[in-house]
Length: 210
Image (cartoon, rainbow, N blue to C red; front, top):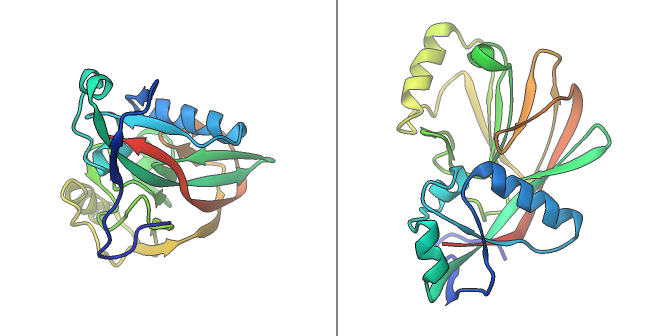
C-alpha cells in the first residue's frame, strides 16, 4: 500500500538476520536488478551517505550501527522498470536522459525522480519514494545559458521550480526517447542506447531498513 497524505510511513521492526547493506546508489541498483530477475523482494539496509535514496529517506546510521541495531525502521519503496532495446532495467532513485559529460547542461534534459536528490541537488523537492508515481522534470521551450546557470545554482536549495522552461509532471508511466547525442543514466549507471523507451512504476516493490 503506497503512502497517502497524513499517514505514517513505515514501521519499527526487529533487524532481519543477515540483512545486506547498500552504501552507494550503484550497489543498490545492482541488488535491485538481481532481486527483480529472480522475482524476489529485496530487503536492504541503507546508511548515511549511501546515495540519493538514502539521503531522501534521511538514513542516519553508519554500517556498523546498522549491523548491531536491535530495531530498525522498515520503509516500503517504489521502483520503476525501464523497457528499452528489448530488455528491462529497474531503477530505485532516478532515470536521467541528457547529453554526456560537460554538455549535460545544453540541449534537452529529462529527469524521472523517485528519490528527491541527485548528489547535492534537491531536484524533486515534492517527490516521495512510496507514493506510486515519478516526478518528471524536463526542459520545455527555450532554456538559454543564463537561465540554465540560474537554475543550476538554485538546485542546491530546491528553489529551481517552478520555472517557465522546466515542465513538472507526476506519472505512473512515461514514454520518451533517447536521442543519438544523449545518454541514459539509471541510478547513475550509464546505459548506451538510442531510441524509444517506456518507464513504469512498480509501487511497494522492495523494503529498505534505516
